[in-house]
Image (cartoon, rainbow, N blue to C red; front, side, top):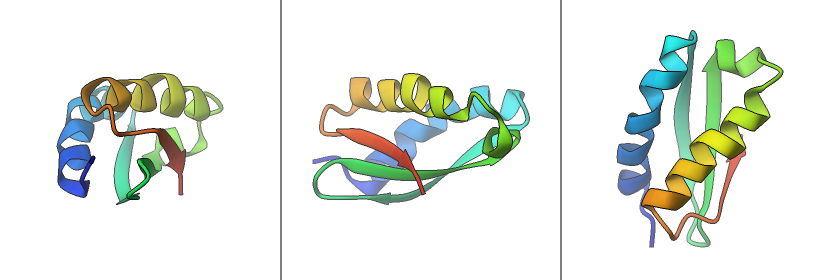
Length: 75
């Protein structure tokens, strides 16, 4: 099962890419069913491409390194 700590550690790997574009990401919660809730901040919070960044970037990476992650949503 993906834990808050394991997801938080994995998010640290994608964070520099978001920060390079003036954004950031905050982990809110991880459910027992594998649903990860995050908050995109800074430039990412208002970017029209944010949903694509969330799904094709963050979600894809988390699913790769933590197979128990089923979905990443913005909260």
